[in-house]
Length: 410
Ligand code: HEM
Image 1 (cartoon, rainbow, N blue to C red):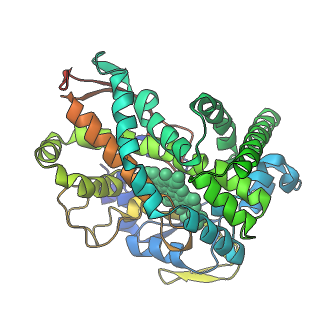
Image 2 (tube, rainbow, N blue to C red; image 1 turned 30 degrees about the vertical axis):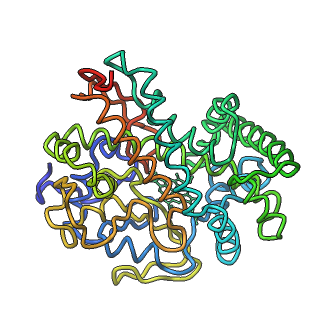
Image 3 (tube, protein in one colour; image 1 turned 90 degrees about the horizontal axis):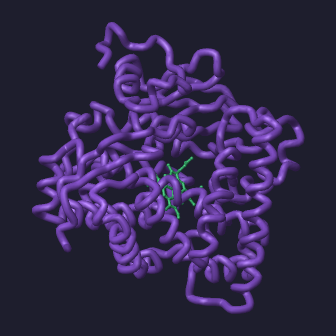
């Protein structure tokens, strides 16, 4: 842990040191101020809780997705299939367009629909554990953490199990559409093929579901489109967009939850003694080990954040994971305490107009995941972790081997 004297004078969002443990850097940045200029990148970065909230709540902010893609692949970016597909996703929309698409999405994605799913999420978690419980050792991210959200989203959209692996494969190509680094010709082709494949699959699924509507989320989204609240292209992008937003994110966060609980055995013991602590434990996991480190905003007008004037069009990174450890807000912020009564909401699901629209589903999945894993597999140990090195704004395991003593239910 660097002390103030060693604090970095400047911040580099691409620094590989941020991958495994970004918190010493965030702490040093907060010690130097709540908002900093990022040298060489023409950006600002907010690290304090209040400054992050200001960025996220400031009106008119958006991702400038299309402008960023032009920088990555050239002025024709908006004609590339990957960009056309991604720009219809609710997260990339701006202003009134965003309000309309988000409204349709929220109406279809009701709390009731999510709660109704809970027994199935629990059963899926148990079923996935059955497959490896006798082995005493497993690579948990692929076998469990990623599969649970994959199955859950597929249940909501009624996507057959046989098609789910293909969707995961296409999603890998899609991930390229969300990064910052310039795309080379091979990557561009992969991203375009991925979106074209997703587009084709979901158009067919939607055509079929229109003929035979069910009581599922996809049918509800189709009804929104048929009522004129979504264009057909928006309907398609926001159907596969659910996988983009809710699959790897939730999967990696389940991985983070396992790490947090294994690293704090006394907290895990409390949780196992009193399972009514699960909701507050998940809240604390999200605060302490949230996956999303930061998101980015640009504004069409000059803004004032934390008392600093920021010119129009300047990207601002809002470090939510740093705000979650702000010592001005949270008492002893590095302490992991599942009984903590949080004075304010953590920032790991964002805030403002683009607040995570799937957070209740994500929380429900993480709750079911940790309840099933830690009650069935006693004495879980983390043997090795391979952190995701590519997704610079996410912190979570890509692969993780765990071992345990025995399946208690057998
Ligand atoms: C633990 C897992 C998750 C995390 C950490 C997470 C985090 C976030 C964050 C930080 C944002 C805001 C991004 C920004 O402002 O730039 C966001 C937006 C969003 N999330 Fe999540 N998310 C998770 C799971 C999910 C799930 C399960 C779904 C749905 C299936 C979902 C759907 C969305 C959607 C649709 C948006 C865009 C909302 C908008 O632009 O209005 N997320 N998420």
